[in-house]
Image (cartoon, one colour):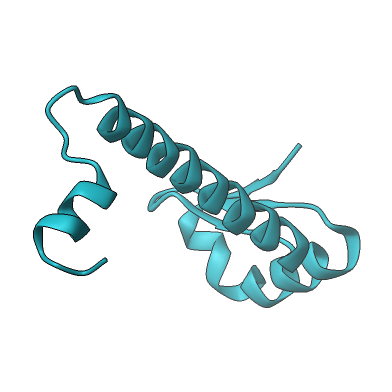
Length: 84
């Protein structure tokens, strides 16, 4: 569970929170602006999850485009443009 700090008490202890997050892999949430101090490993995980979500969205869009009955096949476009 993440340690929670009020905004007023966060400034003097922000350095402490960062050290704790780095050494113990514990998350620290600063209430008020929705800020969290997290270990770098968690940041890497969040970034990977974001990339995977974007990949899923891109794949869904590509699948939808390929399923479109009105799309023109790539080979046909190349032929029509004389790019064989």
